[in-house]
Image 1 (tube, rainbow, N blue to C red):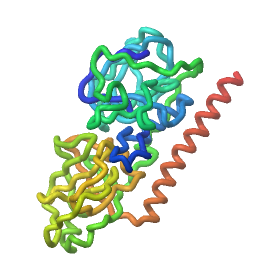
Image 2 (cartoon, helix red, strand yellow):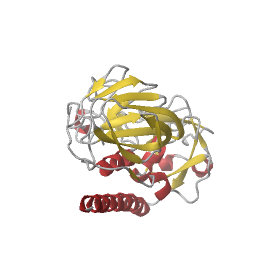
Image 3 (cartoon, one colour):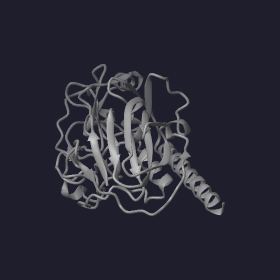
Image 4 (cartoon, rainbow, N blue to C red):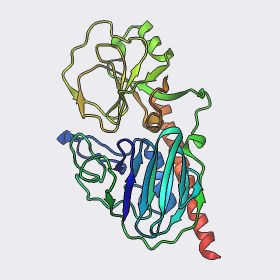
Length: 325
């Protein structure tokens, strides 16, 4: 059992999401940074879809109700347990009664706490993820509050400490400036409805992430990007990563709690291998879009998969060596 002691912002229980409910108008939900959640589960020996806690703001404090292993991944944080400082992207063991205090977030936008066995909230429509709009999944379909208790799957596994290389280092973009996040996108259905000058404006601009951004969508601010003529479309299917252009010309990136349909014209779509980068981009930060061919998008996903494969192999080797001692 985990008891939430203090929380800032909409922390929630998330797994990798629900992907078989689109036909019913139910979106995916799930971790905004699915790579960080996967990594936390891999180092703990969990199923990679085990539910963890997504922490978008600090400070955040909880108490462990029993001995258990846990991992912190995602954003860079200043954290301590039982008065001992711990780095991000780290696995260690908590004792019953230990208090984990995540005090500050130095970089990135979301930290993930995973525990051995996973957070054991009920499965709703195939997922434990919190769906805020529908108020289901997670813990009562809402953000976590002080005093909440989260059940954890029992696990007898005993594991030692382990530090791992963060995804943003291994999968870093070589041409990314320190003050902005570059994400690769493929052009979408209405791209040709924008003239050449407007298309170039979209690619060359640095887009500010506004305070109106959240798990539903990132609203960007920059020069107006408008089609050659007004477009009126019936609502049609959309997925996380789709970049829509509303009438004011300011792009919206659909995120993990996005609705399943919309009528705004689509200019591009963030590739799956980079959607986690958007999830870790902070409010007030800047995004730049890089046009990518479909084949290159698949290659980028292969690169992400290779990173996870190496991690699985390394963790297995570490555990084999530990058990042989």
